[in-house]
Picture 1: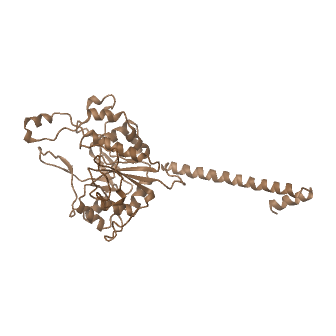
Picture 2: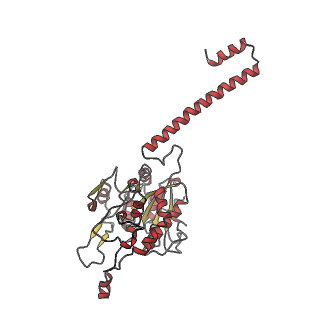
Picture 3: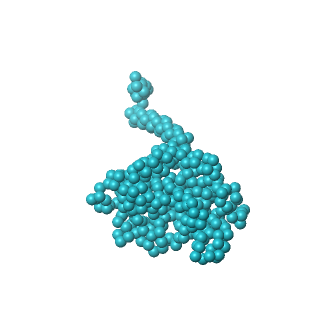
Length: 377
């Protein structure tokens, strides 16, 4: 016999009025709803905790607007806009945002780019940037600060105008959203004396780090970079690039080589995060591949520099070789960073010809030359 029938039988024996009976039945139904709601809430809480236990504390059952902010740091235009256009047109527009730091006054519109994805995505407060100067850091900070204005941005990827994606958007989105860590190349390099003792005590020498400029940050680490007002002023004063050797200037250039040498963008982010005690929250490697070539000429003014990929060298085999890399070795620390999956999602430096080869090979998604720029967002 059901609870409702038993309740009706008892009511009939005690001559309870139909109005009171309906009221009591309603109370019973409400009681069942409350009990069910409590069980469901406990299930939701346990499910949320299980995400936290897995390290995915930012992923929630009801979070569906988590975006990747793509931050382009460029000289003026985007020479590889056609490749990135194909990358973004095969993506869900609710899952990404775009920000571009270009030279002051430069506007992305129909006259400067063929891709509508970049229309008016330039920062209005950009600064003139010089390589090896603190203005490079300032531009990065402006990009992060602009992207943080959107609360749905959870991952922040810093890219140059010669960077290319090595996978389609869906793969990269899943890869980044499944990790609670930032990807920051960060290591101790005792071979170069770039730390300036005048930085102490604001920046302790034991917190001094070096790494690639091209980083991927989760939101809480992006906030450290964007809103820092302690480390940047010290870098602005004491971390400056020494002028390159210019033999045409004779002794003057040789004297300049005695100056302290520091490349701000190679030290600022890893040092800032180390000072905040966030190194345990990092995958201490970059997601952007660069092939470095060291000059054998002792007087070469270029020294270490990244190799530029051309159409010929952007072959499917070479790209697959990059994708197959599963660990990164840091000689200065005798440390190996193993990757759960491919180590690199992006690569640089790529020419337009090399990028076109990636496009036609379908690296970033389906490609139809007849409809490439006909898409609209």
